[in-house]
Amino acid sequence: MVELIWAPSAIKAINEIAEYISKDSILAAENTVQLFFEKAELLIRFPEYGKPVPELKDKKFREINVSSFRIIYELVSINVIHILTVHHHARLLRNNPVFKSKLRSRRK
Image: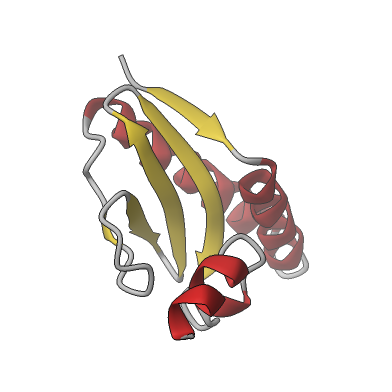
């Protein structure tokens, strides 16, 4: 069975997203958070469910699209997946603290 490990950065991002959405609708915030976790749970049965993250050019980094967001994860092994962050599509991935160093080193 695949083990999903949620990075603190992913939980923090979900909390920030929920807080922002809840300013308009608590129900919408709750539904969005629930959807994030439901989609991530699919990885237990289908670890390669997501597509590779194009900016990273490394097939071990994959993403699942959920509404306007990307759940970005790393296939560590056949049995371990790290959920790294939840990132809004409109934002540049290179500005996400989780990936800043990875993407900066690729530009040089």
